[in-house]
Length: 411
Image 1 (cartoon, rainbow, N blue to C red):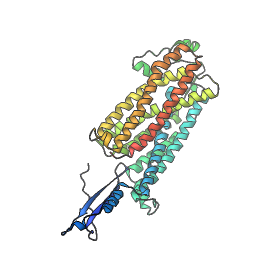
Image 2: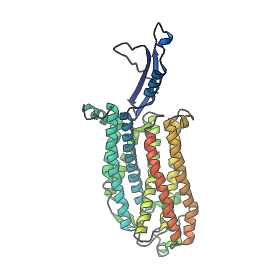
Image 3: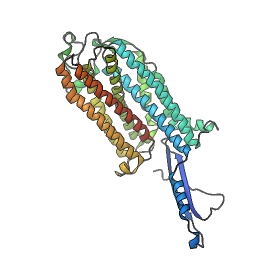
Image 4: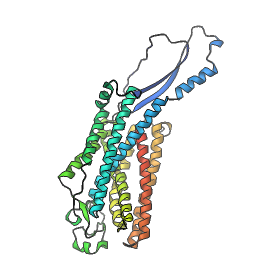
């Protein structure tokens, strides 16, 4: 795409015969691009006995098709780092928004979600450090990455280095996620606002005393004694951390090399943000449902399912739309979907996302109505919700890993 031509020169003339070349470069999006080719050095006087033997041709093919152990290990480390940092970012961002928008319950519920938000930030930081080591190994071409020191400086001074710095700072802000609660009926409910905006009846507001006396009078269900995460000065700092994490995706990945950079980056940020609301929120939903079940507390599965389905449905639509725009921007041709590593991984990811989305649709269209009919004592449908969201969570874990592979795949 950059119209550059690379010229390979040799100090000594090449011997006659077949020559194989393997190459690898650190692309502007901080991910390696590699390939191989061969050519013939012809002689002015070639006889049949001078033709390459079958053994020589086989050796050349093996050379062109087989990577050294070093590059394979470097690639595996890159996938590990990206998986950890992506999982930390999605769960951290999604957990913060789940605590702020969806969760209504005891202070212990909110405390447990924020606990895992902080652990996600640690996971994010570890993944970023592994990614930095991986990128230094790519630039150096091996694992002697600490010398010369200019290798580390080169990585940190790149756009990828800036993205990594933003993620580390953002992770630091997420570590400030601590418990500060307020009675739920004293704050405006974002779920009600979303339902009202899309024209869906939201039932009585949380501040409605009648709804508090009769919790099942409307959706989302209001419960006397529920708490919400209080928005304070410290939580505004956490919002800055979320912003920095999302902003970091402007500086690496396909946003650097594909399409109009500003537009592609904006779409990518929207894709990551909406995906975090869905995937990270789902992880936290699984956590809260099982935490309450283990403690033999009222699971309130209907309340959680209704509240999360409103947010998740909107996030899923936005994630899908942004992902479609990115796929069209990155792919040069439809055949890329089955002829490139990037396309094959994308198709696998879409298949698993479709399964998770179908499970979410089943919960919304079938399970929630069943829970409504069963009432607050419907233990069987509560168990069904625990099972279904757990499978969804497992599917999202696979999606995160595939996304990490996708980002580093050749397109």
